[in-house]
Length: 157
Image (cartoon, rainbow, N blue to C red; front, side, top):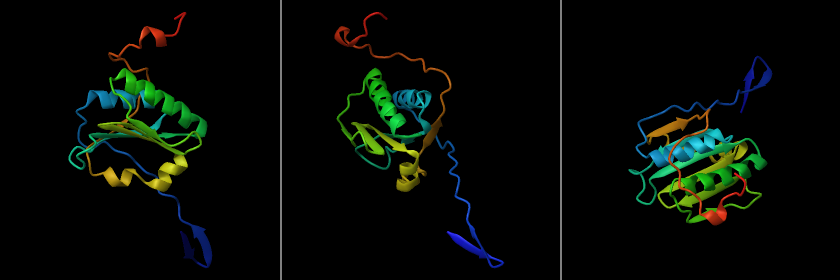
């Protein structure tokens, strides 16, 4: 947006989005998944409690990756975190070159974006009135995780 001021044209400063907690999130599993994303380079990780807004989904977990490569790493982390929290993935939408990946785990849906795509889509404005929590995890999350079958465990650990 351009503004005229004293015959000079100036660009308006872009709005800085400030995320604040609202209400509480009763699902520890959703919070654990969000903590894993935040710890593994996810930015602006927010859990939205949408149980009162939609009959199909209980929680949206939204996270931003700095670039495309980090987005793919975040997708991998998300899938591992869902498995560790006893959540089965129904399906994933978005390809390797996508800037927006959706992972459907039935009652929990993860929306993973690049910075530019999250700004463009403005997903957060749809659910800002729902209870939500910004998750910032500086240390590795500690909780009881589901173990992988022996056939999937790394040898030499």
